[in-house]
Length: 258
Image 1 (cartoon, helix red, strand yellow):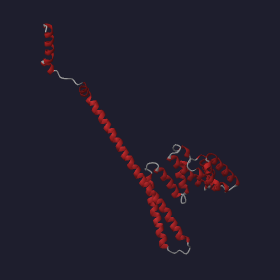
Image 2 (cartoon, helix red, strand yellow; image 1 turned 60 degrees about the vertical axis):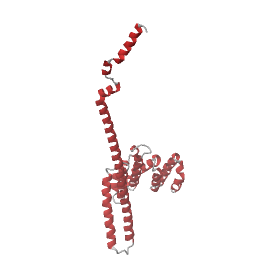
Image 3 (cartoon, one colour; image 1 turned 180 degrees about the vertical axis):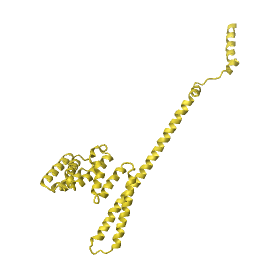
Image 4 (tube, one colour; image 1 turned 135 degrees about the vertical axis):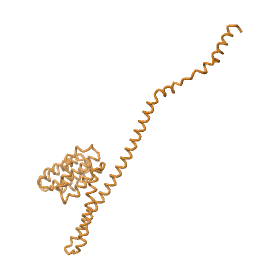
């Protein structure tokens, strides 16, 4: 081995045997990056957990609110049906002029009053319910007052006079609006000073309604008494059938009645 080669080997051994090498700390670039930015990481992670918490809380609150609204609406349906049943019972008792069971009549009247009070309380609660139950409660309020206080029913339903602006096509909101407009139009047809307005509303629903066109056609025909009104109703129904020919069988008897 030459002197030059020996010096080279000694130099290599000296480098690796140098005690200073052991004293030099190994720098991990990832660890160094974390050390410099740990506050930012902690803030970001905390923000993510806060978002997850609020999303979960919102979902739980929403589901709970929807369940409460559905339960409330079910109770509203029961009270509405109860009112109809009790009134039918009272009508049956008083239909016979020989009926002398005053105590029974008074008992049924008290039940009607109690049920109505419960119904009104449920309606007040439904004003804060989620959709679609809130809108449906409006229809129930109008139906409950239709025979006793039609003026109040029309006042409740007037928000649906411009039903096309309620919700998108095919939406629950649009369906509720059409149902409300149908109720409103039928009530207006029974009010002398609003007959023309009611007929125009029902005609519009017949031709352009998405959910109640057939029902509106039947209402329009049912309230047509003069030859001119019958002719108009027939033309309106034929206009509907030009768009929905599949309804021809359903409306055949209605057309024949005009």
